[in-house]
Length: 129
Image 1: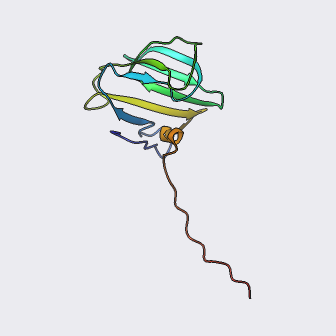
Image 2 (image 1 turned 135 degrees about the vertical axis):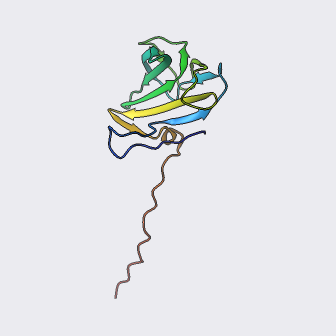
Image 3 (image 1 turned 180 degrees about the vertical axis):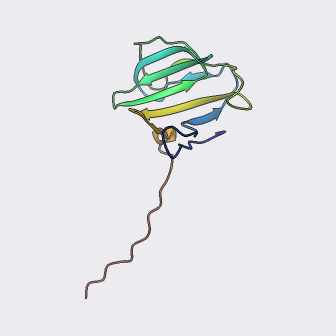
């Protein structure tokens, strides 16, 4: 991982709304879960694939040359494209992987059982008597 999820304090502020994973251009990009392709094509000079999942989540992958089309059903781990060589976002080749629920950005590492961990204070044991 080159850069982790760092959401902004407010939706309109700068932040990092996904995770950057190091990979050389041409690397196969695979769907994180089963769903339907919501978008597959160019956006702002780079390829983007978005997968809509049954549980209301949406994953995004860029920069990717899509091998899927809008409306196509995909399975978990299915190849959805190849990583493009687009300079600018990372110093070397990387996949920017995003996760959203509605308009709320989430840490995509949550899909792997990872992500932000919040430690809660230890409460003293309750003593009766």
